[in-house]
Image (tube, rainbow over all chains, first blue to last red; front, top):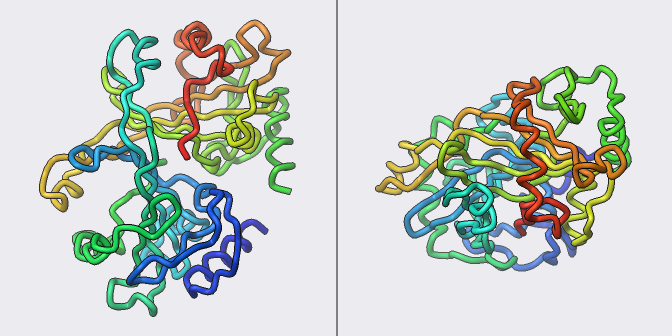
Length: 173
Length: 173
């Protein structure tokens, strides 16, 4: 039942016909992100974990990559390319030292998630997004479309991993 | 329906009466961890994300904290203490620089999850674990009970956050 619900949601998001909904993240259904016309997928915060990462430099964040049920199944089956309906979400938070944890460990070693930075999505629709490897890209900040300029750079940056269907993140078992 | 299934599973795990099951992680139901008698909770790899972190030092890992449905609801409701049946999972992987990602960013900045190190659990049962703040602790490596010596140190280390029901990790929105 859960899988069916997710598939229907994914298909609706891809088709861009999601009606008024209030997802688990608490954000009402809103404006579509530019270029690829992707709306914030309802309930993405409940999706299963693919992996985690830390980016230093300007980003300086801790991040989690989540996938809808289509994505998780494809990852676990080792299936490439990802099927239409796949949605991959990258959440990120500021990289913050934890004084509380460090006190317990007796040294500076612990970094935790601070405030959310933005959330990015890759949505697979091999026909709609044929010109960008079958993937549409979106970025949201505080539930609203964000990063219009960045979106044009998504596809070229992902081209080096074309052999893995343009997805950098590997599944963390 | 999903919530009911999770509650039943949680109750069964707490009671230590889980029969032969093959969880989503692919590990068959096995030996109980020492001291607190906790078995590997079936399907924990499918649980929702609470937060992420990075530990330097000897641990040198990237970690994700997941929760069963009881845990997630309590976190989102801001409910303390956590109700009986709460299970919190800490997964961790080696902290690995990603050459692939760095090549795209044009500098060394990206760290990703490598091989899994171990998985730790906190199981809430206010009666069974009354002497340790209502929480039982367990650690598994490759699906098998692990870290017997470490388990005795769990409760004293968590005492500084008694006001948050002994849980360090805050929910990352």
